[in-house]
Length: 66
Image (cartoon, rainbow, N blue to C red; front, side, top):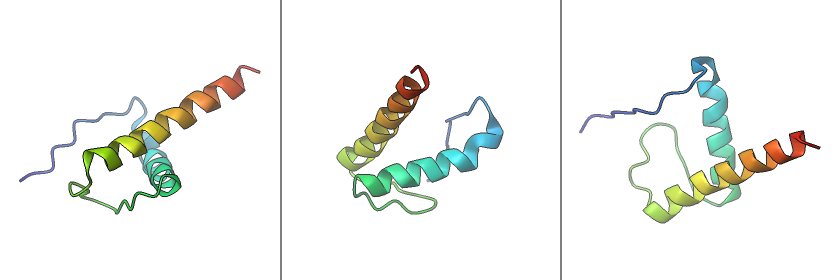
Protein backbone atom coordinates (compact mmCIF):
# COMPACT_ATOMS: atom_id res chain seq x y z
CA UNK A 1 0.00 0.00 0.00
CA UNK A 2 1.49 3.32 -1.00
CA UNK A 3 1.11 6.55 0.91
CA UNK A 4 -0.70 8.86 -1.54
CA UNK A 5 -1.21 12.15 0.27
CA UNK A 6 -3.18 14.45 -2.02
CA UNK A 7 -3.51 17.23 0.55
CA UNK A 8 -1.88 20.34 -0.85
CA UNK A 9 -1.15 23.52 1.04
CA UNK A 10 -1.44 26.93 -0.59
CA UNK A 11 1.88 27.80 1.04
CA UNK A 12 4.14 24.71 0.88
CA UNK A 13 6.51 26.27 3.42
CA UNK A 14 3.72 25.96 6.02
CA UNK A 15 3.78 22.14 6.01
CA UNK A 16 5.91 21.82 9.17
CA UNK A 17 3.78 24.36 11.05
CA UNK A 18 0.61 22.50 10.04
CA UNK A 19 2.13 19.21 11.22
CA UNK A 20 2.96 20.77 14.62
CA UNK A 21 -0.58 22.21 14.79
CA UNK A 22 -2.07 18.79 14.02
CA UNK A 23 0.05 17.13 16.74
CA UNK A 24 -0.96 19.84 19.24
CA UNK A 25 -4.65 19.35 18.47
CA UNK A 26 -4.33 15.56 18.69
CA UNK A 27 -2.71 15.92 22.10
CA UNK A 28 -5.55 18.20 23.27
CA UNK A 29 -8.22 15.63 22.39
CA UNK A 30 -6.19 12.68 23.70
CA UNK A 31 -5.35 11.02 20.37
CA UNK A 32 -1.91 9.45 20.12
CA UNK A 33 -0.61 10.58 16.72
CA UNK A 34 2.81 9.52 15.56
CA UNK A 35 5.02 10.77 12.76
CA UNK A 36 4.27 9.05 9.47
CA UNK A 37 1.49 6.53 8.98
CA UNK A 38 -1.55 6.80 11.26
CA UNK A 39 -3.92 4.50 9.39
CA UNK A 40 -4.59 2.55 12.54
CA UNK A 41 -6.65 5.42 13.98
CA UNK A 42 -10.39 4.99 14.15
CA UNK A 43 -12.60 7.35 12.17
CA UNK A 44 -13.74 8.85 15.44
CA UNK A 45 -10.17 9.60 16.54
CA UNK A 46 -9.17 11.09 13.17
CA UNK A 47 -12.37 13.15 13.07
CA UNK A 48 -11.81 14.50 16.55
CA UNK A 49 -8.35 15.75 15.55
CA UNK A 50 -9.70 17.42 12.41
CA UNK A 51 -12.62 18.88 14.33
CA UNK A 52 -10.30 20.33 16.97
CA UNK A 53 -8.14 21.87 14.24
CA UNK A 54 -11.16 23.55 12.63
CA UNK A 55 -12.44 24.73 15.99
CA UNK A 56 -9.11 26.38 16.80
CA UNK A 57 -8.81 27.96 13.34
CA UNK A 58 -12.29 29.48 13.63
CA UNK A 59 -11.52 30.71 17.13
CA UNK A 60 -8.30 32.31 15.89
CA UNK A 61 -10.12 34.02 13.03
CA UNK A 62 -12.86 35.32 15.32
CA UNK A 63 -10.26 36.71 17.72
CA UNK A 64 -8.52 38.51 14.86
CA UNK A 65 -11.78 40.29 14.02
CA UNK A 66 -11.94 42.02 17.42
